Length: 341
Ligand code: PHE
Image 1 (cartoon, rainbow, N blue to C red):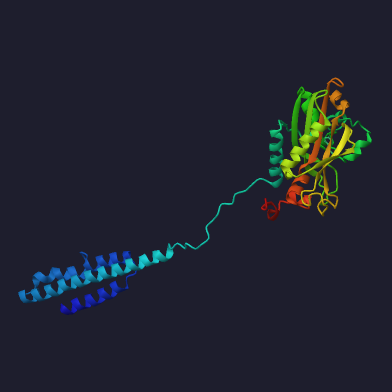
Image 2 (cartoon, rainbow, N blue to C red):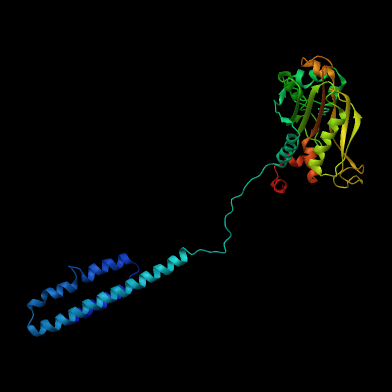
């Protein structure tokens, strides 16, 4: 009997010592302490033994139970400790690991400049107006005093659609659209995309943006001097207070007299540099008193109203404002470029 007890003890303690998880411990509990265990078997036989033997074996069996129980407790503790230190390792938080940052986008530089331009003109009482990008010949050319075969049409080489329409070559078409539906007086500003059949280079794209301005009121109320001061105000707002402007005589069929206007170079302040090609001035757009033929084409009586119109390229202004030397960058989709704004 004693022998048996020692064997059980040896076996049990050895197995318990090797247990690796709680499930194993649980089954060893059943195996060595459960109803069908060797220990319980031994205890059951006690009643058949002599009194002396019963006492001796009984004590030894109880001691075995205690030893098994405490072996199990110790091992369980060991397993739990190990599990805990594993959790610590597994779920450890490295506070020095770089966090994941949500990348926020922002408006395209052209959109930013466009909004800035709109804000300046809104302060001067202009209404922002948009219209279609695909135009018929009448609104893009004829109504703007550019009838078929007029040589001025060559100034804007055009993509023709099979329908006879054109992706508008300038935002001036919206002058006509707006006047067809609105009676003067008004001041409007028209931002938008335009298309020209041009080869692209560092300063030309076949698809670019313009901002068109149109002021129309009763004759005598609109003057070149007044319009010039509006443009001057705008240039100061966009490029800085010390910006100067100048008008040069030029020709556009829809204005008479017509001008091109320049701003003093914001980089060299008029001294002459690479950006302004050593002239001290940067050409920004066209302008002029609206040709009476244009007003008549939308049904107004000749000489009853007068207008002033101007138009300039949005890319050009963004290029000057930010010192960008290649217009193609705007449509490149290159994040290294875009993230600078
Ligand atoms: N529409 C002209 C162009 O695209 C610019 C312009 C607008 C000139 C208004 C005069 C008046 O070249």
